[in-house]
Length: 504
Image (cartoon, rainbow, N blue to C red; front, side, top):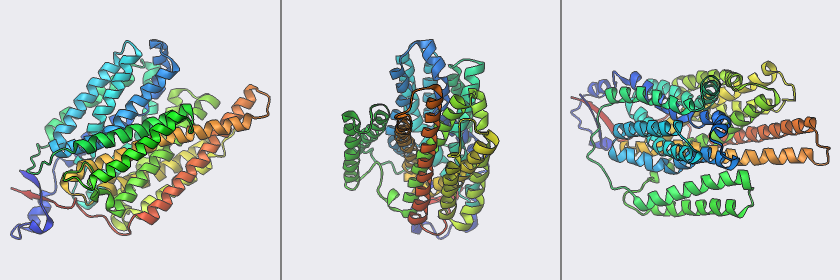
């Protein structure tokens, strides 16, 4: 039997043989556990994009307005983004296995309700439910991965695979969503989660050991309320910026209110005995730089997913399935570099080098994408850029995810993992608003003074895409500077600080 306990390193009994500790650290079921965790992570990531392609058919079926259509996307992002830190702390308090299983059941239930929706209100509520249980599921999965793999080499491989899923799942969602919508029905974009969740639940129930902890601090209720409100305000504010504009009172009030509440949250966390987010987690330079890298990647990657999709479908006339297939080289490049950067580069050089180089690759890929025209060739103008972006995101994301949770105490693993997902979600929300506004402004500027015609409209659209791609290239380049300057040189700790695995 293997028991994991949280103690200070100096409290390790000197009589415990070193070989016992090393042997006990190897879980014989660890790769099966990785498959289960990866499946759950894929389900959460898929739902950020899979429903988007199904929206036109769902809108026709349920007869809802364009304003309601936005809420089907926003409801998921609001619930997921605002509750992630709470979900991470709950997994620390009540056990990752329990939280993971509850998250799976809840996510599947919400998906079933959404698939059976008879009106738009039911669908929006179901999407919010997915976000709530996704906020339980995602940090529990990452923290379980952190505590399952303790050998540095194997941990690198595991995080590489997990990072590839986190980075490439959005593109896979486009393909799966297009296939299900075209060949079956839009409702299957939600029903498919029941199959995924059922497999993951059976695997998790059989493979994950029950956890017992003598350390169970009280939940920080004031901090939970403040940070959830702050994140809600920021995500909602950025969603309003996309539709109402950056200077609209509703946009500014939500954004400024959210930022002010984040300041209140930081003040509270420095003074309460059981903080929701212990400031020691973000005080470390490597973890802080890793969080920022995940944030910037989420912001820049949005440009690739959304605007390349628009370009291929609207300007080149690709079907949803063909669009999804067009992203496959990007996924292959992402998987290739994610697994190798985490397993080979990270143990040799530490996280700073692969994160910096990965961001530069992504910046180069988005810069290459600015070459598109009305009739660009996929093979020469699009695919090389997608491969570069995929390789860059893979090289940066996997080490960043590992760096973000390295060296944390066992009781903080859940909330540290939640911070990874929070930064990715907030980054995506900011990317949505910022780059959509940039695109709209660029298109309007191009059309100014020109006679309206289908050709001018098409050229304005291409102008908006290339402008966004330049912005995205700059965002990724900024990420390279952040990784190079903030992240410390050197290797990561081999296991979470304060965690000793002993065999009996």
